Length: 113
Length: 118
Image 1 (cartoon, rainbow over the protein chains, first blue to last red):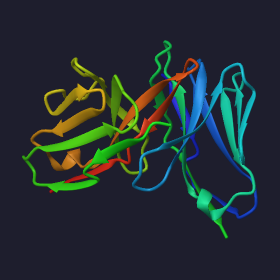
Image 2: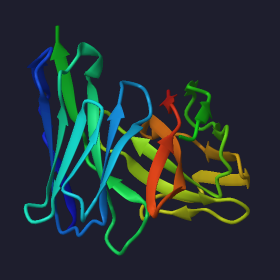
Image 3: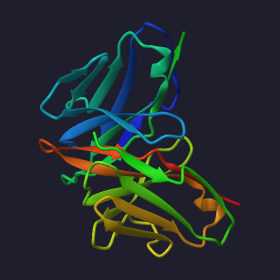
């Protein structure tokens, strides 16, 4: 069955360091992958989308990579700040070309001042 | 991106009563909106796809008679939880798709509604 895996353990890092979050998937052939940010008690906010034929996408301090061979995406936040503390969700378009993405559980990031 | 609002943000109701949650698209005409449910530390689970002017499409395992969805206009979808039970307590989030991004589909989410059934 299809599965999206994100580290359930919180990632704790020091302010100014680069945070790297991982999204692994099995039994998918996604056309694209998305990353969202979710703060406690709030709905997710779209951050970045990367297509299957793209290796890397950047937006300000954010960088996403997409390795379809490894079936993995890495999400990087450079020069991290305490305000970056949140849960980050990855989402893949479902098999069969559905435009409705399926979400991972998310990884909590805590940036310490 | 599109702006989505939800009302109420929090609601507490007694077991056996019904609760209506509104989802509004403030600046985007959405023919399709989605309803999700999220339990603590769990992923978003799609409940149903709400289509303007037609019946909603429910995911497997979601009772359509319990979770009534009405998408009466291009800017409003409502979810009514009927005969609520404590196990229906959850965080309900709506979203809409922006299909104008060159063939990819970014979702814009509402702020969510925390339902507690006592």
